[in-house]
Length: 276
Length: 266
Image (tube, rainbow over all chains, first blue to last red; front, side, top):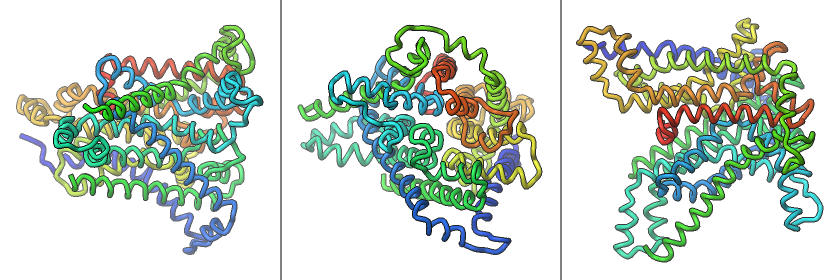
C-alpha cells in the first residue's frame, strides 16, 4: 500500500508556502514598488536612475568587475580542474581540501585577509620590495585589480568544482581514441575535451558571475566607498540615504540581471545537453 | 602520449599547484597574523604572542553576537532540514505537473543577490508589522539555509530506492515512521553535507542580516565588520582564526563520516 502520488505532492506545501510568502512575495512587492509612484504605474524612477552619469558608471563598473572576475576564475579553474580530474590518492585529497576548506571559511574572513595582503605596508608590498621589483610601496588596496583578484579567490571553488565534476565523468578513452586516429593534441582538446566540459564551464561561470554581480562584503572591504558597486549603492540608499525609491530601483536592476543569468545559463545547459 | 600532451598536462599541474596556494593564502595569512605581538599587520610577526586572543575576552558584545549567530544557524538549519525533506519527497515521488519548476524555485535563493532579498524582507516585515529582530532574522536565515538543504536532498533522493520505504510500510510502519527510520538514515550523508553547508552559510551571512538587525540583536558577521570600521587591530585576525577553526572542525566531521568527495558532489 503506497501513498497516492497526488497526496505525496502535498508534502511540498509547508516549504513551498514558506518560500512563496517569505521570499517570492517580498521580492515581487519590491519589483512592484520600483515601477509605482503614488499607486500609479511609472518608470520615472528608472529614467531618473539611468539619466545620472554616476549611476551608469556604477552599473558599468559592477558588470565589468563581475565579468573580469568570472574570466580570471575560469582561466585559473580550467587547468586546475584538468589536473584535479587526473589526480589520485594524496593529491586528490589535497585538491579536495583546498577547495572545500576555503568554501567553508566565511567571505568576511577571506575579504579581511585580502585587505592585509594588499595594504600599502602589507604582505604583497613587502614581498615586491624585498625582491627589488619596486622601491616604494604600490597602492593596491582600493583598486579594481585588487577587487577582482580578491573576488576571484573567494569564488574560485565554485568555478573549479562543476568543471571537475564533468571532466571526472568523461570517458578518458575518448581523447585516446581520437589520438589513435591521428588527431593532434590541439584538435583533440578543441573537439573532444572542451565540448564535453562545456556544461561544467557554463554552470561554474553562471554561478560565479551571479555571485560576483551581487557581492557586497568583498568590495566594501577591498575598495570601500571610493568605487561603488550596485550592491553598495543599494545598501547605502537604504541604510544611510533613506532613499527607498532609489534602493528599490537598483535592487530590481540587480534582480533582473540575476534572473537573466539563471535563464540564459539554464537555456544554454539545456541546449548543450540536447546536443550530446 | 606525445610530447605535446605531456607539456600540456605539466602546465595544468603547475597552474593547479599555484591555484591551491592562492586558495590557501588568505587562510594562512589570517592565522599567522593572529599570533603577532604587534598592533599592526607586519609579516612575519616581530614576536609571537597570544595577546589578541586574550583581548577577545574583553570585547563588548562579541560573545552575544557569537551566541546569536550559533542560535540562528542551528535553528534555521533544523527547520530547513524538516521543510526540505518534505518538499524533496514531494518533488521526487509526486506525479503532479511543475515539479521541475518547484525544484528550481526552492534552490533559486542561492543565485539571487542576498542584499536584494534582505531589502525585500525588510520592507515586507515592516508592511506586515513584524518588528521583532530575532524573528525577522530567523525567517531570513531559513531562506538562506533551505536552498542548500534542497540542493543536496534533491540530488540524493533522485538516486534513492523508494521501494525500501514501501517495503517498510508493508511491514506495518506508518508513512512518517518509514521516512524517519528508512529514508533519513539511508540519506545520512546528504543530510550531513546539506546541513553543514547550510549551517556555515547562515553563520557567514551579512547581506541579509544587516537589514533585519536592531541595536540589541547583532550577528557575528555584522559585529566583525563593525569592529573592522572602529578598531581594525589583529584581534580581528584572532576572531577570524576562530572561525577558520570552526570550518576545519566541520570539515573533519564531514570527511570522517561522509568523505570529502561526497561532500562536494553531495
